[in-house]
Length: 351
Image (cartoon, rainbow, N blue to C red):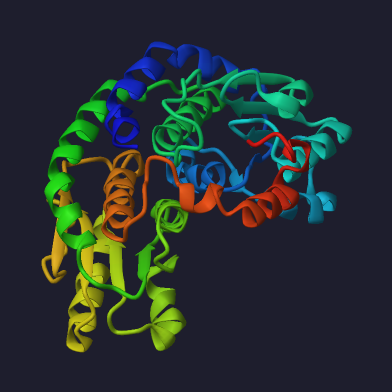
């Protein structure tokens, strides 16, 4: 897994060389006043949320909707809507069903996949692959997540007709971030905690949800994500005092609330970790992973990396293997039920 985490700057470099192809894929959906509806499950959904501020800056009417929500809210689809459907395999049941519904409504669909695109690739008007080779089977999504997020940003530029994104510069910031978090992630991971709460606001809500999902996939430690303010009105009241609270602070407005939240939680002795920048510091947190300076709308391309490394180190600290996730796959009944829930077509294949 570390190899996958560490290759993210190189992956962004490879995407940069194909930037025009992703922009062209976005432009192929046409420039209308309709909404851009991003639909996916898991990492694709989180990436859609994390790209929302970037899309808003471009003037796009960007809506992130889980495929089941899209199916339930089918009557709300409009003739000018354009659909971005994301699935690395192209075979996630609900994403495929949502794409078929959009196809039946005559809507333009772009599929972002990895490889041939499976069923989803046959439905979409246009598909584009990340062309990201897998390092190992059943690896927790790290490079594929930031690659999906970067691809969405490039597609958004194509939709808006405004090509400006410099992925090479972001790759350099990722390299610096990986160096910053390496030692501290291991230190934090060794702390005995009862659970982890990953909190933020704005586009970083997507990053927070992604980070919690990685902890769920790699460890047995209970993990949740939430909006920083809403946490104080809900999760906080039932939270054990030895839960770790991770606060993503990459926006100047958020930083003020992050500092006050970490200060308040310290009164209870709650351990806190801030993922911040020099411009958005959270000095009141017990630990800080301070990232290189970054435009807040691009921050999700970097802020996911500390969460990946933290999940990796917590897996090792709790006696699990983050390179195989054997604790999931070797639980044959749970693994089979997961396929029944999300990928019935893959039952019996071992995938």
